[in-house]
Image 1 (cartoon, rainbow, N blue to C red):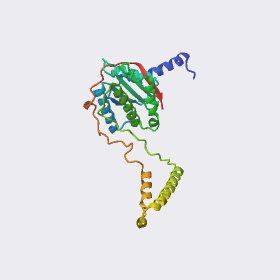
Image 2 (cartoon, helix red, strand yellow):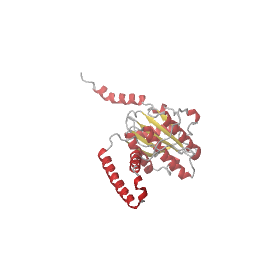
Image 3 (spheres, rainbow, N blue to C red):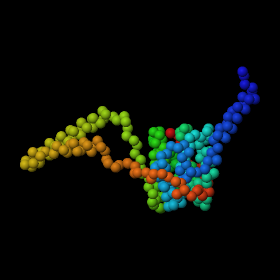
Image 4 (cartoon, one colour):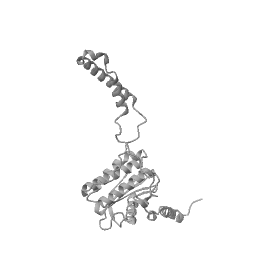
Length: 268
């Protein structure tokens, strides 16, 4: 049965209205400096980000909001980010120094919205660099790592511009080990290492005292090989988390700041 022309024309409008009603982003309330509406962050990472954002406000006077959403509901990411920024009033009203970093998980879109007062410190080009640096972690589903990296990059930039030192730091995250280890390259590297160690042992024997030749240091190659295979200890490891998080302990609300569309958008 054919659909009447009037109904066919009205159907797209009805669908758009339904989507807009379902995605009432203006009704969202901040859960803290971190609002994880998509529920993709673990409690430890969220607590670390909360404390870092609190430290950034305490030391530099800048309010940073980190937000995740499941979907945009068909809306442009720029419009949603600007709406949340203005509705929540991110940044102090007298300075407008606020930041909103938005991740939209299903749509794979992100936006860094910059308040008026921070545009000289975080210009559009730098905002784009921050988003691009997040892509590898986001493509692997490591949303917390991506937010940690971006938050610390922004915090360090702001602290340097304002001549302050942040008392709270975030642990730099290392990517998980690659299960597809290139065995051929590893074996070739081990073979090269064995040749180098053999040559070193030969040279050592030439100048070693004869009385100690019986105690040739056969443990040296094994020790060096173990160190190469195990990698540098402690490098890039994240420290322990803070455990549970209660936003009432650190978040006192945003201050009425405003933004005019400065920042950058990207996908991953």
